[in-house]
Amino acid sequence: MICICVGTRPNFIKAAPIIRELDRQGIPYKLVHTNQHSQGGNMSDCFFNDLELPHPDIFLESGSFPVDRIANNMQGLAGYLERIKPSIVMVFGDVDSSLACALSAKKSGYKVAHVEAGERSGDRTMPEEINRILIDELSDVLFFASDKASERYPDHPNGHLVGNVMIDQLRHDEPKLLDFAISLDPYAVLTLHRQSNVDNFGTFSKIYQIVQEVADKIPIYFPVHPRTSPALKRAIQKFGWNSNINSIDPLPRLDFLAMVANAEFVMTDSGGLQVETSYLNVPCLTLRNSTEWADTISRGSNVMAGIFRNDILRAVELVLSGTWKQSTFKQDFYMVAMRPKG
Image 1 (tube, rainbow, N blue to C red):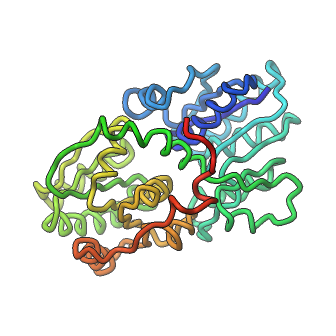
Image 2: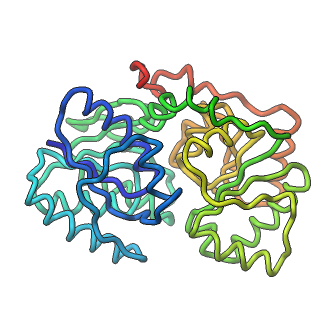
């Protein structure tokens, strides 16, 4: 029996195609929700509904700060593992709760499998980079999403290049997007939630003022993450508001994907959105200086735009002039696992 640990929206997306396959093959599993994203509504509950995920078997206690979150998740999972005694514990990506579950499983004597292993940004100032490194080192089985990731562990006895499960889920969802398509004049989409961009008000202010300039060129839809909301309110008070920026609540997954699929371009600091835009061949301006998804740069529609005004505005002009690069993700064997949809 497999113990599957999820705690954030990217985790839910990555787990969904695996759970469908486990159900198809009749392989037993238990689903643990670590509550790292514990808000209801569009931030958690409806993601389970949209992804057709089963109700979790257990909810762990989380925390507001990384150390509390890791400690609480470790303690809660250890007791649950002793009850269910799984053959292996599966964790996803690079979030704090994935590290907590990997640590708890190894300390309790259980094997760990890491989905999306081997990805690196090279920036150890990012908490997620530290988590990636530690989870990989703790794991008994590594599932690689890209050939570049697999090259980091050429001699691992249980390393497997399996393709990107986010793309598996996007392929499953893609036919549904027609039902959610929106018909609007040209627009862009903005998402911001990364600690380095929103927790430091100086950095957020810089990005906010650049976004206001971009909004003079094209309307922007901005689903506001709860983490981003306080900084946004403060920025509005200090710098004013551009009416071409449409701040909205976080959207259900399919509504959001339809919005992204029909956008002229996306500005984001998200990791998963870099992959999804590359599959959809939507220009992506990543508002960071590094990425764990190198293939979205070399093969996808993504560029590192950073947080500097001239770089971002130059990238926007390229998109609007129609000279953006085209993604090859749909033709790439390692990006899209060659399995039937569903």
